[in-house]
Length: 440
Ligand code: HAM
Image (cartoon, rainbow, N blue to C red; front, side, top):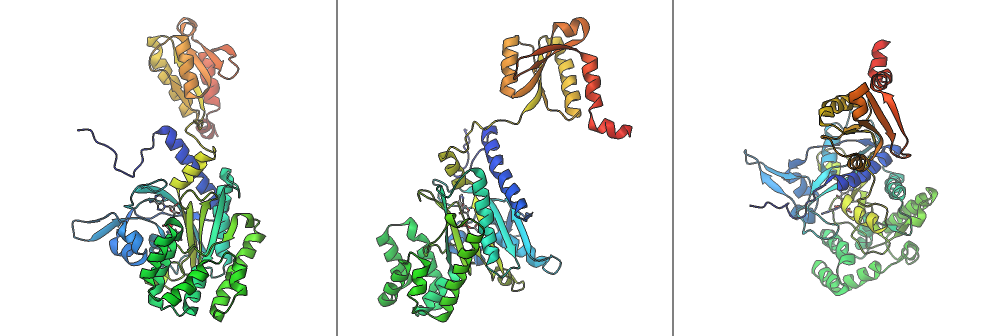
């Protein structure tokens, strides 16, 4: 029986793993310089945690199971509920504000498609304990900081920003009942992904009243935040929420990233817990799904039995990001391997043991070393050395057998010199860090 990988999962062979690590290391580096500390949680949690708070879409995409005691569990589809649970557990002990990041491997039972898999990695950054919208700006800055670091520019990506609070107040101003809001958000979240008539049909299901629907469609057609402000026949609460969003744009300008950012009333996010700012980063051409998404979730900790404490953050998956970075020629499987300091070429089978011993000496001295497991012709050995990415080769052959000498070859310049084996090893020992310490 030939066993295949599960649909929607990936195998990371070493070239893909190098590329993958490049993405993950970038995420970590940028998180740290933006002042976030790393955390992680378990890969599965109680099923009810996600059913209650992540919203319908995610609840339908859970990989869930029962443990032997009949408890309903689920593999994490995201880490935000875990974060809320963890922070609540230590709420009094943790210094605020909390700025944490994580790179969990998560699973969603989605229909696999371009940029959407059933298992992926997701960079998360969150700030807990800051009510001011400056924290939302900081989350956006950190996301853009990473994408800029990869080499993407404002010509490649755009941060689309709106506010669920503002939208909620606008819906209220249109006298749309509170219990219909979630359904309307879910419909709006699909707007950009489905044809216009399908969206209108969906909206009709969620909001049967035609007059209200027409008012709403007019609001959804707004292109500029200033238009909303100017046509303000809405409530003072809506005006306040609009002002707050205007301040966010002003902060983003002060941070020097306004060319990346624009207002988009269509951004509402599928997850149920967002309460304020919501944003997504997309490719400028709009051909791919969102690279990342986030926003403010001021009630999640309280809903999980903790205190009322504001929170904001974002999640960026590795799938769409990788597609975009490949399309822009920023990454490819040809990414270089980390350099190997020495390749030991064996020209006689009786020298394999010596080669293994020498490789061990080099490694124990903190250098990277590879060796050929059996003898071969010089041409083949040098090819092997180049494929390994070695900086230098050590040739163990006739000179060694006759008078314990090795040939050192610089792989870049092809310069060669013969060196006494013992002397080479002695010098190595001398540079060995542990040895130096123990001598002191
Ligand atoms: P989300 O919008 O569900 O938000 O996911 C955020 C990002 O994860 C997406 O923009 C996408 O890059 C990636 N993603 C989601 N589903 C898939 C999938 N099936 N395959 C590949 N990538 C995917 C959240 O998860 C929130 N918890 C983010 C957050 C953190 N909000 C506040 N803090």
